Amino acid sequence: MAAPSRLLIRGGRVVNDDFSQVADVLLEDGVVRALGRDLLPPGGAPAGLRVLDAAGKLVLPGGIDTHTHLQFPFMGSRSSDDFHTGTKVKEEMKILTRDKGVNSFKMFMAYKDLYMLKDVELYTAFSQCKEIGAVAQVHAENGDLIAEGVKKMLSLGITGPEGHELCRPEAVEAEATLRAITIASAVNCPLYIVHVMSKSAAKVIADARRDGKVVYGEPIAASLGTDGTHYWNKEWHHAAHYVMGPPLRPDPSTPDFLMNLLANGDLTTTGTDHCTFNTCQKALGKDDFTKIPNGVNGVEDRMSVIWEKGVHNGKMDENQFVAVTSTNAAKIFNLYPRKGRIAVGSDADIVIWDPKATRTISAKTHHQAVNFNIFEGMVCHGVPLVTISRGKVVYEAGVFNVAAGDGRFIPRKPFAEYVYKRIQQRDQTCTPTPVEREPYKGEVVTLKARG
Ligand code: URP
Ligand code: ZN
Ligand code: ZN
Image 1 (cartoon, protein in one colour):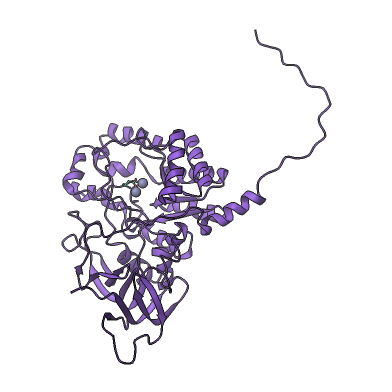
Image 2: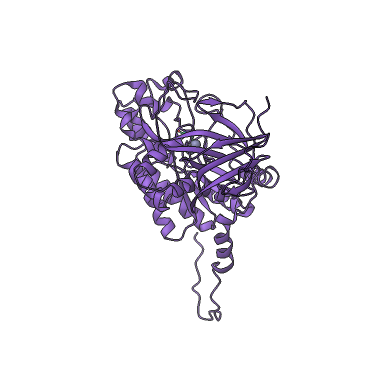
């Protein structure tokens, strides 16, 4: 039987980033067609209309995970072109933005001799982003210091996963974060710092925003939900499962700190950096932490982890939850209000959310294609009951109804107003001008040519 083409979500509490209201939501042809009270006709649902009862539940805009790596050839599997530098790159960036709907580019300050860019290369890449109206993104870690730290740890006989954190401590992330902000500010280019993992780096971003810089910080489910004490676990495989870059931090107050900054707006979006490798792949580095493929899970866990640690713990309200899980991302990447909002005309990407139900995260029950879960055993309030993508129910009562290839790439336009309004105004009013002077008419010393 064909799925009904129209859905009515009835009596839920519709939550947007600015306010919540009890309302019905009518979905038709993949978009929100109507929003209001009592949308069900008095005679009941006509043929072709399915009614989903959401009384006592929340109706949220579908989450936007700002950062994933799916089918990513990385750390040994395949070498990569150096596509960042040179004029060819500049031209490719322009084509991608103009013709292919790509409006952000990630640059690496880490992974020396592979992806790492020098400062002048970052300057060039940021300048090009600014020119074409894209958002510059950086992986902020000092790759030179990491390379030296690796040598030091190996010389000390530290070959286990703890060496991964010890060779790239917080300061390595914070320094690169400040450097990226300084370079972007010199260019007047908007900057987006991916995977904010430490208190030090988050403080750098918060300070820069207070200083008026157009910079956004993205903590991830991992940095909000767990910490780097696991690298010291006695079980090698347990410790290795948490290896990612920048690393999780051994300071256990990190997740709460990052969540507070997310709640008050110092940090802006949330991703996962979902990049999974099974234990047997992690084991490539069983005798040398530098060979452990970097990456952790999160794509399935993000919403629940943030609800639990953010909303359930009283750090943020349901509206700020929507802001940091979808609305802010939609604004930065120029998808708003098509995405990140439940409003007439918006895409029908919706989650019916039970804020009171709980679930326990476990690799035994998750749907991620990885044999462990870094949030194993975490009890989370906030459970998705129904997930709707472009007007179609894709998850309900524990059952998925999706086929590979159902996803759609959405082209995004450059010069997102949310990001670029201030940038463009600054170009007009804050560009320095020379001081008008009478020419100097006095004596000028003559330099002698050296023999
Ligand atoms: O360890 C990580 N983060 N893996 C994915 C690649 C990256 O740098 O984002
Ligand atoms: Zn990265
Ligand atoms: Zn990443």
